[in-house]
Length: 259
Ligand code: NAP
View (spheres, rainbow, N blue to C red):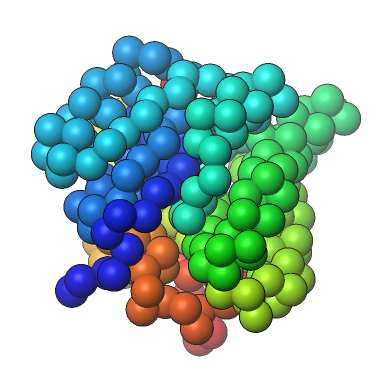
C-alpha cells in the first residue's frame, strides 16, 4: 500500500533500537526523511547508516537524552519543522508501589509524560500552520490494563493519555492527528530486561521466564519491532486522517477485554 507520505519528514525519538527503530525503519521505507535520536551515539549512527543504505532517505542522527531539557533543545534545533512526530523514551524501572519516592515519580513523569507533551508543544504549531501533521506517542498496554510491577509507567502514561485525549480533538480540525500506540510485550532489549526481572524474582532462568510470559499472550509469542513499525507508519499515513485521539493496542490479544 502506498502510504502517501513520501517526501515528508519525521522526528522519531529514542530510535537506535527496539520499537523506535521499527517505526523509523517503516517510515523510511515509505520514503520519509528522518531525524533520529538516542543517547548512545555509536548504536544511533549505526542504525542511521543502516536506514540510509537500505531506503535511500536522508537521516540526521542526534545523540542526546530526549528526557532532558538540553537534550530536547538539541534534537528540536536539528529537526526544525517536521510533518511527523513519534515520541518515545525508555520506560521506568519496575518495583513495588512502596519503593518509590517523590523524585522517582518526578523522573517517570518527566520521561514518559512531560517529554512527549513538550515535543508536541514544540511541533504542533508548525503542523497546524501547514494544515497537516501526524503525532504517534509510543506508550504501553499498561494504559489499558495496569501492570502491577510497573507502577511508575502506569502513572506517567495515564497522564500523557489524558493530555492526548483532549489535545487531539483541539487540533484535528487543522489536519493534525494525534494518537497513541500501546505495545504489549515485544522482542526488544526492554523485554529481555523485564524477562530478567521475572527470572530473578522467581529464581528461574531467563528462557523459562520468557516462556512463562509468552504463555500469557493468545498469539503465543512476543511481537516484533517491524510489526510495530508498520502499524506506526500506517497511523502516520494519508489513510489515517480520520483516526483521532485513539489508543491502538498491539499485544497479541494479551489484554482480555471486549473493547
Ligand atoms: P529498548 O529496546 O530498550 O530501546 C529503547 C531505545 O530508546 C534505544 O534506542 C535507547 O537508546 C533509546 N532511549 C532510551 N532512553 C532514551 C532517552 N532518555 N533519550 C533518548 N533515547 C533514549 O526499548 P523498547 O522495547 O523499544 O521500548 C520503547 C518504549 O516502549 C519504552 O518506553 C518501553 O517502556 C515501552 N514498552 C515496551 C514494551 C516491550 O515489550 N518492548 C512493552 C510496553 C511498553 P539509548 O539507550 O542509547 O538512549
